Image (cartoon, rainbow, N blue to C red; front, side):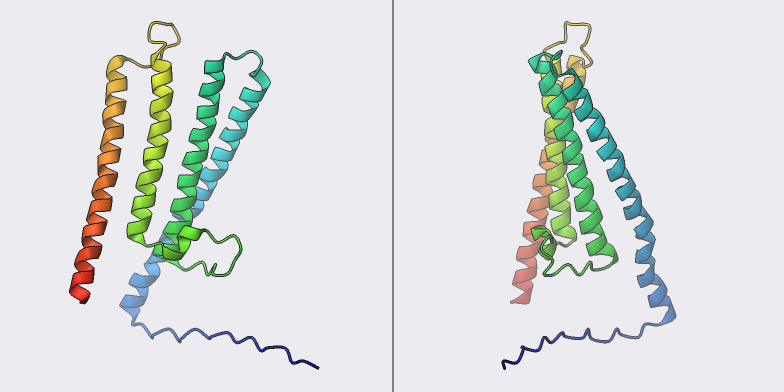
Length: 192
């Protein structure tokens, strides 16, 4: 008869006893919970929007031109990318600023969650915003070809401003990465 190996779970160390003021200040992080729950509601709204766009695409696919199909698909991709951004903010923000999710060992644990901190979250959010901006800019460029038609919704000036805003997002993301790398290098030097 073989003995089953004992599974030992490490008990969590006891929480330090906090005074009243530190307890109130530290507990105030839970005020963010309604914000994250609100973002989950926004995620549900994006699901409805995605299904509406998908229904519009599939029900009119035979009537659409190739360009109209491409615009509908870009609208779907845009909804998905914004939804991904919401997931990063909800999960990463809650884990970073409110409380641990304790997902270690869960088969669906996101790979990036294991090393998330405020700095990593900023970089991931910046990259997601650039992706969303890129899709919006691509849609604008496609629609800009129709500037002479009655369906055109963008002016040349509007396209220029959208490009400048996108470039600003890219430069800002590069700046965030640079500051993060510089901070890490400085912290490593101080630790030596």
